[in-house]
Length: 313
Image 1: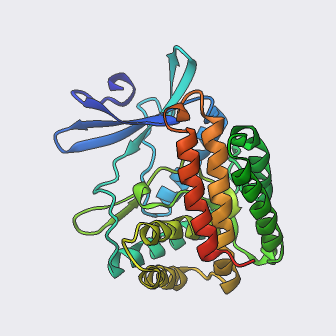
Image 2 (image 1 turned 120 degrees about the vertical axis):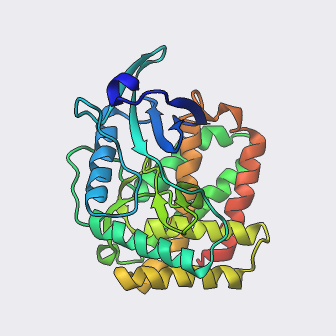
């Protein structure tokens, strides 16, 4: 890192061991994030696309953590690890910390800045591929892939199968050609953005960014409010009011139709299905410590609760 970026005397600390490993580099008040990807999770072309996307967003003056260029001009560093080549990126540090305390000012900031990002990503075509989020990749393929792992939970799998069929039918009833499309973050939950002491906002972790309906990003932020209601930290009425504040701020910058909002619960179920597949896909090098029968039962409780609250068939 010293050789590549000219950074000297930095302390390096592992923050998160995930499908990629995240490190904090710091010295006095200078901070950076270094993210080391696993080849089984992100191929080099996908990482190049993430760099391209973030540089475009940075140049558009959106509130994102962005990749730092090395002394030789490269954005990606390669390392020879025991499991093979791993690629990494040094990112600017997102000042502040996550919060679960959303006053109107913070909700408006998230809505405004998410819309500004969408104004950029809705008109892009990156030169390298990213995943696509659609009915096949978030519903039908996950349902098939997770089937063997639900052998011990046949009733739960049958419910997932039946609900998937209902959700696909419901989504197909919308005129998706009129929905906004582009590159979505697909993980706009509060752990992926920071507010500093002055409530300045920075988004980060575009690891799941891919092409899809932009309403998916409104959906992932909305799931935060489901968790609040599910854990009894707020009532449904309070959650709805907070989402409305966020949505009104979004609409001040970018239009979103009532149909797109109405589709959010069904995209939400697809989000849950996508991650059930994701846990299984990365069982060998990540999720084996927690993706157990107990975890699946707990997660199914969340999914059932979500569907019962929000999906109208």
